[in-house]
Length: 340
Ligand code: NAD
Image (cartoon, rainbow, N blue to C red):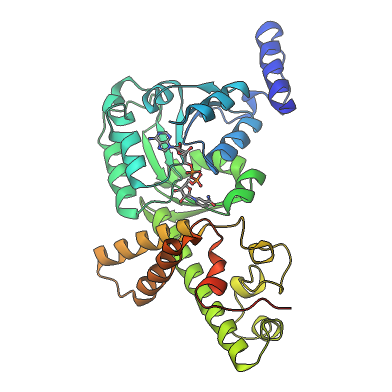
């Protein structure tokens, strides 16, 4: 709260005395993009918008949740009642929404951005939601053929989903996987660097979304692999601590064994050590696997691991574990035991 009050005070000061400090003044933002619109202020978006604000951008926000809007207004943000009003006021607009349908609604719905493109100030559109690459490509094409003027800049769309979760969103250490033109990517880099630390250009439109779902597919399958192995090991009489020592110094080593171990009692500070609370929700993993399965079907890719992983994580959600961290698969699907 103190930071927001200070920033409010400083911007008032600037208006009256023409004064400014480097840390909080919007003139520290790159000249091309001064005002940033942010739509979708949930677990991730609220923290990302906060970090843009702290970096000195003027941030204009919108969410359908009125409590969230009120909270942002109290923090000193300019709040707007529709995506269109946000885009009227911003150079760049970032969306961080639950799914493809929400993103399409914000862009092409009745009060959607592209329905009134000719009236807008915005020219750069960044979607950081995790959605399927096909929708990202459709949106990119819609922006390219819209009546957006873009002033002196060419209107552009980037798909830029993130990896890292709520803690990284809060700390500004997200990884962004970016799809779209090189030029748009370079223009957006300062924005990404205000919210993340690894920014990777993955190629043309949709490639950021493709990278994100491939990453999460690989993460799901490796978590299932080690969980099944730990559970089998326990049944065969090998404890998970011993098995972890072996995995981590041999060929089975992976993030699920050395950083995010699913067996309670093996590692501190991971969701498994706190009853699988916090972390990356099983329902979000099921959502991402669903996107991978749909994409694989559309391009005719062979994907037996995707199908099995989707089935297992869906079963966990149906069993009431949707809000638990996805590493709970060890306990609630494979019936593995805690390490004592
Ligand atoms: P969330 O449900 O907490 O937040 C979504 C927000 O969007 C909510 O505040 C909701 O009110 C708002 N919203 C929905 N429809 C809207 C509309 N039409 N207009 C304006 N606002 C609208 O979700 P989240 O956890 O912040 O995740 C956002 C995206 O990031 C998802 O695509 C998710 O898969 C992805 N993601 C989440 C995590 C995570 O750990 N939570 C990690 C990586 C990626």
